[in-house]
Amino acid sequence: METLRHIVVLVHLVGFAVLFGAWVVEAVGRRRIIRPMDWGLAIAGVAGLALAAPWGIDGDLNYVKIGVKLVVLLVIGALLGIGAGRQRKNGAVAPALFWSIGILTLLNAGLGVIWR
Ligand code: HEM
Image 1 (cartoon, rainbow, N blue to C red):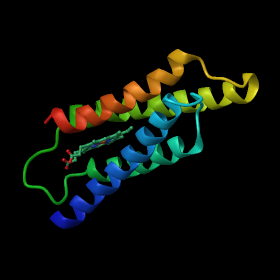
Image 2: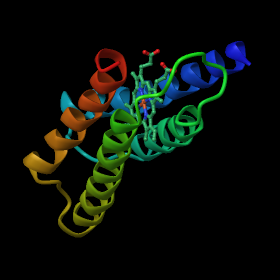
Image 3: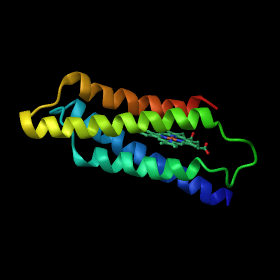
């Protein structure tokens, strides 16, 4: 069970890597919203929900942290949706919206690593 949980954490990290990696590539490039960002968010979200249940661990889970991470994930999803829509219409994304996606992604990773 513990090994399976570690595998789900790995999948969670792959989601983070895909979302944040795609964002970094765009941050130094054309600053657009691209599909791999959606895939990364979906992978991190599904694996995160699986990790939100208390299996394969001895101690308690920090449900306040998990709740905050879920809210941040929903905000990132909304920004990706709004940004993709505006990009289709205007051909570009507002800089504040684009940068918020990267900062919130890093915030969620930081919450996972630092807040115990
Ligand atoms: C953009 C979205 C997200 C990103 C980038 C992200 C990133 C991370 C990272 C980097 C870790 C650290 C893993 C470690 O220290 O081994 C982590 C842990 C964790 N995340 Fe997320 N996460 C996201 C969304 C979520 C969501 C939506 C949930 C639950 C609803 C969640 C639940 C957890 C849990 C429970 C852990 C602790 C895993 C453990 O130590 O057993 N995450 N996350």
